[in-house]
Image 1 (cartoon, helix red, strand yellow):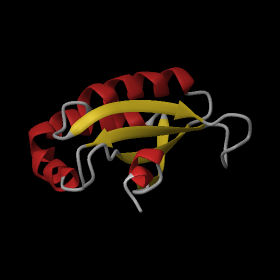
Image 2: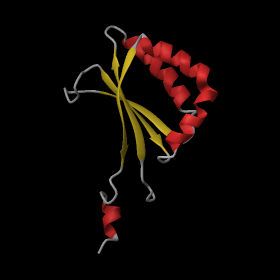
Image 3: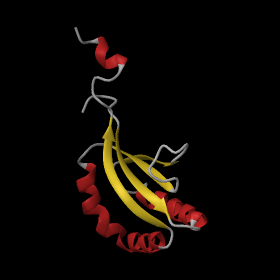
Image 4: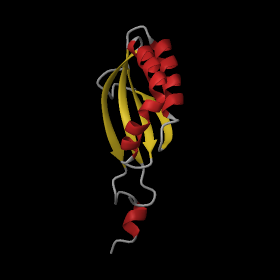
Length: 119
């Protein structure tokens, strides 16, 4: 990948009705666990605002990763975190519902720096 390329694994979650505090607790615990997975650079959560999402109860969690191979490394590392992952899944069941997931990355050639060398 080009230098400076950023790649994110983005998951969408819906907060269950009346479970905002529990969802926050789930996210805090999820962030601690996911940050220990190989190849994770950063984790941020964003709430839908101004009616610009299908539902106002949705949050997106953006996990910046090193590269596409990280997904295979996560599969390999999952047994190491199995007990924590099960506990987190149980906590999630009472507070959030997982929706879609996708990979998002910089569009190569989309910045001035990328275009400067193109003649």
